[in-house]
Image (cartoon, rainbow, N blue to C red; front, side, top):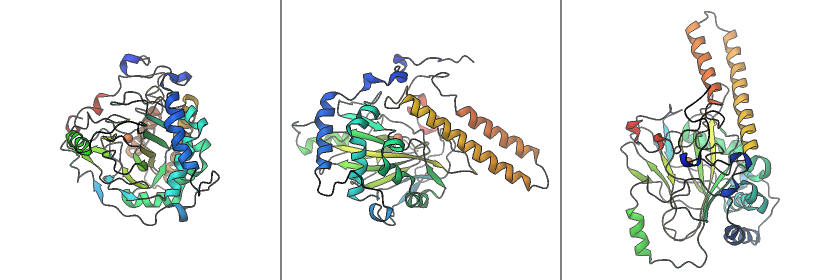
Length: 385
Ligand SMILES: [Fe+2]
């Protein structure tokens, strides 16, 4: 079935070598041997450093964190690109991880073999340099501590208190956004930096390691993993329904924010100061079997996100989606057993929902459809959706 955009093309914003590892986006050797090696050495030199550390929710999660929650109504967001799964929009920062846990997830991502295989420069970032890069997709296979964190029931309980829906981590959860400080760079005076910071009122123009976007996962948990003292900027920025650009204030190392990133336009801002800023982001979706997830491929497929490993990503995607659908079908089948009056309308609607879920498993794949990136919906206002 032919489509308007059957092939990825560089001039449409695609990373065209996605089948062979997008190596033109490799993190430069200067960064790998310089700032990355330094950061890793700093973590390894801490007296408490233990490469075999296992995740212990009692020890590594902050107990009962609370934070102010904002709903889509609070943010005056009425129109959304897809139906929201709940009215939850975002939280203010809340303390989540101890320093030991933060150090460990960062270290697992910074090991040389992980950087080489799962680290890439971003595609289409705003004002990115050799020090802005992504590492991700390594957790389920190579990062036991981080993976145990994403899968921990204790973490889910914390998040579900905010969203009030049942949640589970996405198949590929675990993506790190790095913006590192340039060694030996001279810093302008802080008044000048503050002025620059205040001038950044247009979210579309704010320098970031990932431009203004919606997520392809329902929820994103954004944990501050590294933020130099006296950093100016580096917050998660979001756009409200009346088109204002606001920052989730006061990020601290170990603190987090949760957003319904699928329907909330947002950006990971770069500090205006020459500072390290690293966030660990984990995607979550609604948990079944009653509900099907609304995950997309839009901004995470390998021709868009260069760090994706083609085979691992699509094999995991297929397993995830087909498992969810299989569990959902079995659940629905069991429910039907108990009905006295068979409702055809309801049955048809349900089958259509499952058909469209199956359709969304493949309709954004490179083999089928490669529209220009970023898509129009990332640039227009909520009202124009
Ligand atoms: Fe995002």
